[in-house]
Length: 174
Image 1 (cartoon, rainbow, N blue to C red):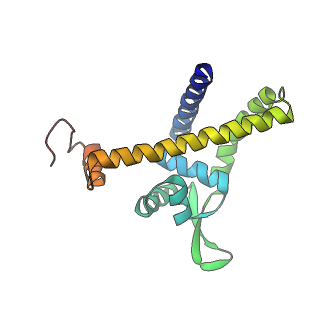
Image 2 (image 1 turned 45 degrees about the vertical axis):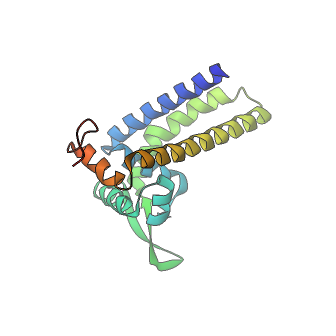
């Protein structure tokens, strides 16, 4: 179990490193890069769906979409089934760059490594990966709850001040 846990942790760090370097390639921050990845995986999404998938507020997702539009990575488009609704999608240029940097090279490496497994073994790996993701998401929810309990009802305001350098846990609250 410890060996498995250690390999999962090392895999998460390797993924984190790829995500960090990928964000730098695109000239965007990690939050924006996470949203790009979600759009790449799911295609067009409403801003609300993107907020839900990324676990960001609707206000924060509006700022993300604005930054991605300015960078030429994403665009707002009318929903073909309901013209009053707006969807967010990646631009063709962004899709091509993602494929060049993240898609083909990683897919080719993974295919070479995974061809040694049978279909049954691959189903087990998929099941384990899905369960591992669910554990991580549940733990993130638990950590958010603990953080809210620790910081109290105005924790979001204090968190923003802390990020701007106006608040430090070692000093008195503003």
